[in-house]
Image (cartoon, rainbow, N blue to C red):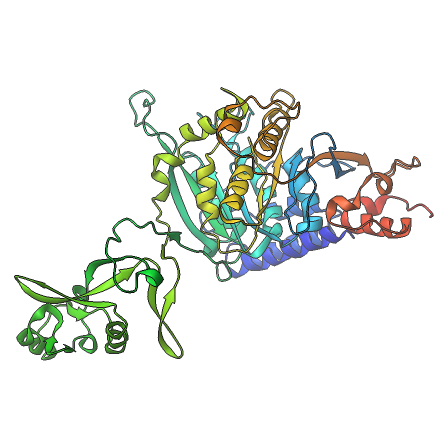
Length: 547
């Protein structure tokens, strides 16, 4: 049985058990599905059988599933030497672009990257106007809602296996499909691993359809593989408002003085209502000794005057210069300093000063700024490839913003609906900014009537990484205003071969290159045969040949 097939089955069986625990699936139905999955001959069949259990009992959500087409050919990576470029130096990331159906690409990626991908961003094709049987989409495909959900379901199941335990997945989706796709994500990744739905501005102004409201936004869904393991970081705070300096400026940076130590909007707690002595003065929350006594006798509102800091934290803060007595014609009040690069923290040994750049949690409305709009994205692509080449790309700034909240060291980032290659450029841009070692893996279909992968994705990456196109030309606007990012790119195509091919030199064991899967060259054909049969679906049906 193939190695990745075994892992796929195990993952699907675990999900069935979880659906029973979550009371989404009846135990008797789960038992039957478990038997069928265990007996499945390949991963395509296992995934198709598992899909029968996704009727969304909790939400009442259901759609008619369209199963993936099955074949008896082996799909594998084949390097395109003409499009690949650069030589990887030790310690440098090896970026990859895979051209072909992303379902096949994901199955092949599982061989090397099972549980290793830290971040996934996808912008799947979805209906632009009506969602009828022959709905137009951004990529000129006929995708009905059933087709959209079915297509995503099978790919998300594979993507989930690629994610590391602390992995995060982002998905851009439009207003009409957001509710349906969120239900799908709830099913695959579980609702408890949902983080947020962020609205994103697509354009600041636009005409309304007939007499309705102009639609100027879409959404970004955020889910984790395991919410308990995932780590997020804040957005670095700019220096706006930090206008004051003191004797600690070189270590702590400038500070704000806009927070009083006493608040009347906090739930009243007598333990936080106590006198504080500063020099010869005594301070009480709210400034009144009489009101302080009344509160301790029980005469107070549910929310009333208290200190924000405990006595111990105040003593530490005052001793280390975090507290100021501010005087006005109304009297004196205690204020706390908010430094740009320092804060008071606490551990098992007590309070201490943490010296680090201040950050804030990203707001759920962070993406409504115009810098994240499609208008800016189109300008960016046009400056690299030329005018009117790709109308539905996302901006580099969007991907950079999403990547910036992930607390992962040198992550592997996957986009299996790569489009024009925005995610790749965003990763390169971030690496240049902070000397990071992020690695991107992009997957993009190359359709017969719309050769996006060859005409746009490849060219965009080649130009921003090397400063020139494949033909050596450099006359594009971006190159005149920017330094190329450098780096290397491995371009793979999805090739296929019959699992019964026995022609010498043309069997699966001959044509599949193990080095494209992070594997060193095998010393014997027997090792190669064992590896192929352990990693590629259907290969167990092939008669091994003698060495």
